[in-house]
Picture 1: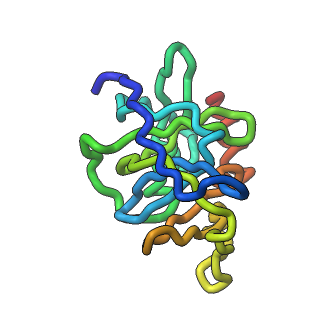
Picture 2: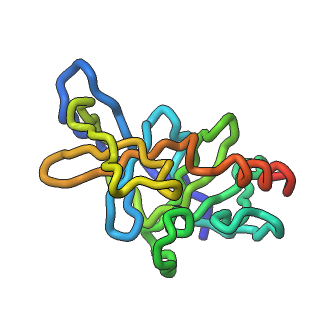
Length: 168
């Protein structure tokens, strides 16, 4: 597939002003997730990924993005979900994590929107555990739930060290 930057989806203003957060919403296994737009560098079509031996299990490999080597994580693997074939809607969301640029494979990007802070609740202790440390909160918006991710927690310290050791 060619490396093409996609247009940013339309912004929906669900809040006129005040305490709100602008996020990029994407799908993984028919669920809605979001990250703060300030952390998103770009959204690109899925492309050839080079596998790197010794990388963490959730890391698919690396891509060459305009001369820069970027590690790419599969969020389905990170979330321990059933793996499926990528589709024409699959995208790589290029984000900043801990001072490093990485790509996140998602099933599709749907929109950019503003979420009012008072519509965000912390994840319930019943659904959070060591494997869900990357959940920052859950937003209730127009009858749907959007899981907000804490990008700084997507990789464990050990996984970050593995990436550095693999010279990614």
